[in-house]
Length: 57
Image (cartoon, rainbow, N blue to C red; front, side):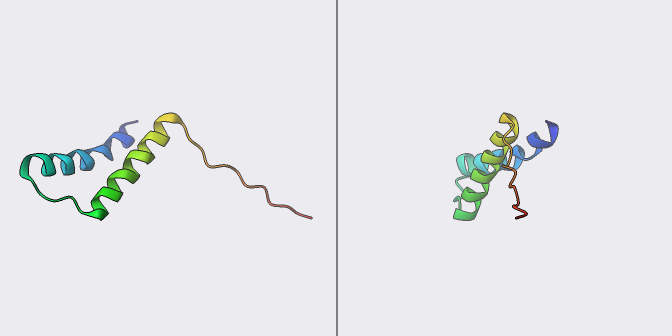
């Protein structure tokens, strides 16, 4: 769980930088924040990738 929380700190820093200092948020930063949010949610909810079966016919 601690490892997951460490990914949130950069998101919080970017949000604070935008909200307090008025620095613009670029598309790459917004996309990165969205990916971090989705990944964190996935870990917290226990999402798993489906296992693909390979046909040996």
